[in-house]
Image 1 (spheres, one colour):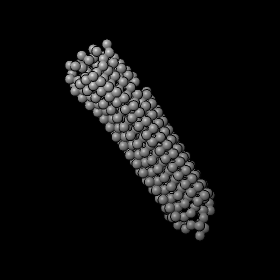
Image 2 (cartoon, rainbow, N blue to C red):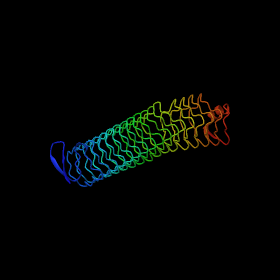
Image 3 (cartoon, helix red, strand yellow):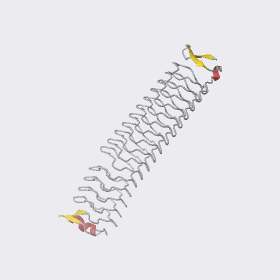
Image 4 (spheres, rainbow, N blue to C red):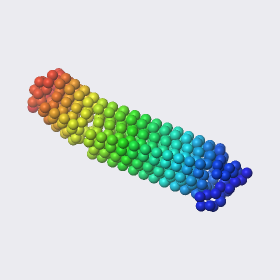
Amino acid sequence: MKIVVRDMKGTLIIAGEYRDLGTALSLHKSNMACAQLHHADLRHADLQGIDLSRANLPESNLAGANLTNANLQGAILSGADLSGADLRKANLDRAHMKQAVVRQANLEGASLRNANLRSAMMSGAQMHGANLSYAKLMGADLSYTDMTYVYLKKAIMNNADLRCANLSHSHVSYAYFDAVNLVGANLRHVISKDAKMRDANLKYVDLQNADMEGTYMARANLDGAMLNNAYLRVISIVGASLNETVFTGAVLTGVNFNSVDLSGKDLSRCDFSHDDMTGANLSGANLTDANMMWAKMNDTVFDGACLANTNLKHANLVGANLSQANFQGANATKAKISRSDYEFLCTQSVELDFVSWVD
């Protein structure tokens, strides 16, 4: 039969052929494509599998509604309240959700490709396995969200709040995270090829075993970040803050460390092969078992550093300050060094086959 849905302002809206179940409204698997439901009050409604594609629902109240497997493609949900709603496996592709309230909602396995979520309030939402490729999330509040195994390819997250969010195992390649707040976030095993994180706050972020190849992190705050065993090939960290950052075992090939301060850091087992480390400050750093093959280290400061068992084959150390550094067991085969440093290295059991020196 034809029913009447009353909106939050008391206006009567003809909704279509559905069952009228009063406060326990059920529109299970109903077809409401293109429906006009401005300010509709659908709190806790049973909307499983409903077709609301291209429906107009601005500022509607869908708090606690059951929208599992619902079709909301292209729906207008700007300013709508979806807090606590069940949106598991819902289709929200190209949905307009600017400033929508989605706190504590369950979006597990949902599709939000190309969705507009500007300034959406999504704190505490469950988004495991959701697809947000190409979504616009500028200024959105995603703090404390579960975003494990989420797809964010080419998503725009600039200025978003992702404090303490869990993005482990997510795919964020080519996404934009400029000026984003990721303080304390979990990005373990994340795949972030060529993403942009300029001016991002990555303080205390966990990036262990992450694949960040080509990620641009100029001027980012990486203080206290954990980058253990991360794949950081060809990243850019120009002007980044690295206080108490942990790099143990990280792959850092192709990175420009020119004049970067890495003093006192644990860089053991790191791969710096082919890097430009000219003028870098490595005083007091732990470089045990590091790979520095073919690295350019002219005028680099190693004062008091530990390079035990470090691979320095073909490295250019001309003009470097090696005073009081520990090179026990290092291999400097075919390296370029200053004559005065050659004599110093000979006292530390360094392998110096075929080295070339400069007076």
